[in-house]
Amino acid sequence: MDKEALRKKNKALRKEISPEERDQYSLEIANRAIDMDIWDYSYYHIFLPIELQLEIDTQYLLSILQGKDKHIILSKSDFKSMEMTNYLLTDSTKIVVNAYGIPEPEGGIKIDPKEIEVVFLPLLAFDKNGNRAGYGKGFYDRFLAKCSDNVIKIGLSYFLAEKEIISLNETDLPMNYCVSPHKIYSFGS
Image (tube, rainbow, N blue to C red; front, side, top):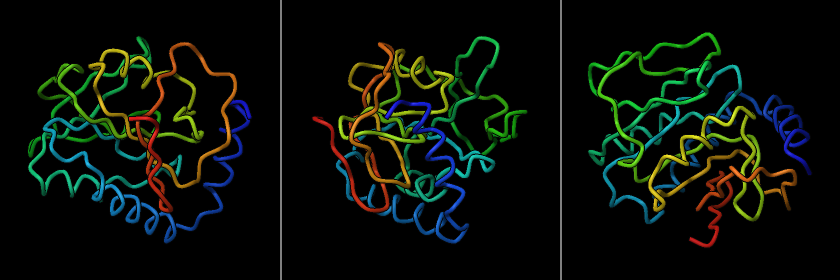
């Protein structure tokens, strides 16, 4: 299935999940992630969920990262340049919701993408080869291209893998893993 059809399909499927189920799935995803061999790194990038898009609540993963004393990185999106700037989450970080409904840091200590070792990725769909379909703006593709070649890319999804995503771009970078409430997918990492 092509990316646009998958985006439409999974946005509709997300609307069928109750708030209680979304919360339970988000907790199950975090609990699965605990069992992964990814916790020996220092710099972790995570997204804050867009409520209007009914995204996975990453608060559970944030709690794990904070409990393990990791450096947590959040992004701020610039819709003019179509780039993300990364900031270290600290006790004084102020989170604001932008015009697109994205919670993001107002500013703070900038972090070079090359320092980031693990990235938790938002997505709408993914396939058995580790390809993801996001919202189509390419923010994460451009961001990941600036990260180290060794960065670990972990998608988070409510749903199981699709057989194949067609209409991929040359800028699309496959994930190393994807975590769903049902299982952890590993893609040749």
